[in-house]
Image 1 (cartoon, rainbow, N blue to C red):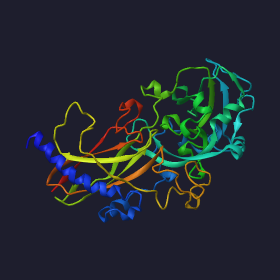
Image 2: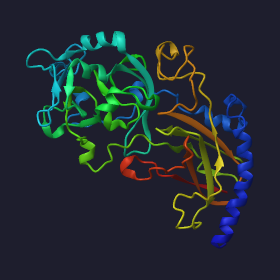
Image 3: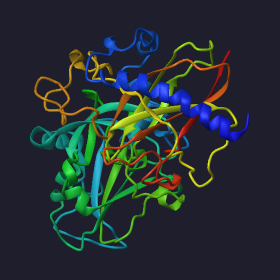
Image 4: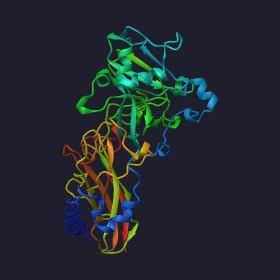
Length: 411
């Protein structure tokens, strides 16, 4: 069979597939139980929406990783709530003009009780998926709670020459292990496009942030990857720099690139019977541009494709079903409920929009049966602005968003 035959065969398969999945898409707003029954076993195996804190994936840095230090050492270096201290200072190389600084050496550093006191008036909580810039899977999904970083900035009474905030955490008292993040002061002081604020975070899913998750306190920047969400935070530096000085920038990453929208699979059978429906499930990350669709497409293995269409824009993609909000959120939330006042949720604990931006969603599709052969399955997202993955930012340095390829056999 030549490439033209393969192309025609693939399109005929997915004309049928498209009709079936469009029918599935019509029930997307209904309960997932109303989806085709063949999808039930695969959907039942999906993980909880929110991740149990202890089950977050860990890509922490350090030799040793700070959260593995013995209890006495954690207490000594300020990695317990009782001993934590935060310095807020002017950048000595690019100084901002401040009315006040907070330093350990003169016993003015912010302690955990002072942070919680700010939280009594200013605390916010919001859902966010935590993702590494260079990995193809999220580390976990949670509700993060803390004090907006701007409240800490204002304590220093900035007057002028403040253009950037950079911050770092405990790094084994070894300058070579320091891991920095930074943000323009405008983003810290103002929340663009209805984004939640950047926070000094001390709770995850309603519980104190554990050392493994960056406790006592870490930075959480809602629209950014994990490298901006520095753990074990100890220093906030207010600077007149006009450029980023993130550690990840020094490692040839694009540190100004917010989270991208992309999809990946969770359940794809290795082998299926010829002409039998094929149940598929996966997840999608809803990045800064939101999520409108998840689409799937399978073609015979080895089928050529137009070199001028590297992102398969003319392929016969078919819509999958984005699953509705779960009945049970998981994540060991207190009383199993969304905490009151969580951004993006109503007072009754219902999401104000679905899918939620900067979060995840599960998807499912029942692909019509295929003739015997070897196939490659691909999935992609279409964001809320109409851009299909990996566009509009296909470059890996700004976050991984390759179109996933999964091989399966039909026998």
